[in-house]
Length: 441
Image: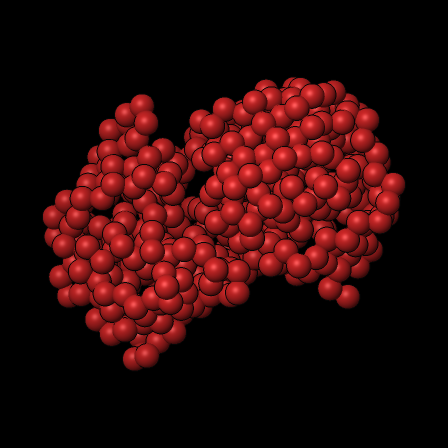
């Protein structure tokens, strides 16, 4: 069946856990490795649909790739090295990261390429990508700014000056990838956002200069530099780990240690927010691996949480985890307020709306607007009714958040579209069962 049933709360647990490789880094590694003229090898690559779609797109562009259960090898074709059939169509599936970033590598492709995606991705805005990439010399035909998109590149991409005002790492990274194949220097004034691309560029000793200002970063990139081989063990994904962090926090007397997590400061907004809410989290065994900070996390379950007026400075670094944060706010003592979250409704589904829907279903009063939500917490909440979660555009994070809610708050849950997790975290349910969850499917 396409849905799961959860009818019992999870019992207290004390476990060690390793989660899957970071999706953002897996996709970026593959795209950059394709631009090297050498062979690159990775371990712990996330074997999700989003990453597999990345590999499939690169193969269609003439890149030889060997993928096994233990490693992935990419035999790069170098800058401007893609070779492909005319009238090529690439499918990004559900992945906004793939769909937007790969466009940066296509600005030099002379023959038109069609980029498409699934129903959810085809709802999302791509003008934020096509507008800056047009300035490199590429031409686009869009469906009112949405997929499918026709891309026709240029023989001689020109460097640009770009002001990124959304705080979107995807927009910034697409421009950075396009800049690799230009003669000259591209300048990006970017609102603060995830910096995985910058760290990879610096680690590879590509000609990038970054000046960090209070509210933005000034990034300069010189193109036409040969990209070296990239051998990489992908750290664990904090966005995937977040489901187990919150599961443990809401499971009184439980204890969990999650190993080798990427704690890049541009991704750890959830840790900062949860600590403000008095969730018991310790960051231990810190180290740096090829530019990225990694560590182990130790989480303890509790029954007392603090309501907060969430500082907007954490929004970008926690954008994928707010549905989970709302669950903690549901059990906090008092009223929590989260604002400037309109970007949540630009994700795989309108997540801010879905956050409100889930809270309504579990009996938590909330007031939601287009960009904010006020949550009236109830520390003694116990769900004792049937709850059905469906029609959420197969958004993997809505599905997984619902699983956490079911296992910690009680009730009898029927959660549809279990295959949605294949886009980002195929082993999610197996790991929940490892911790003691009783899930029927």
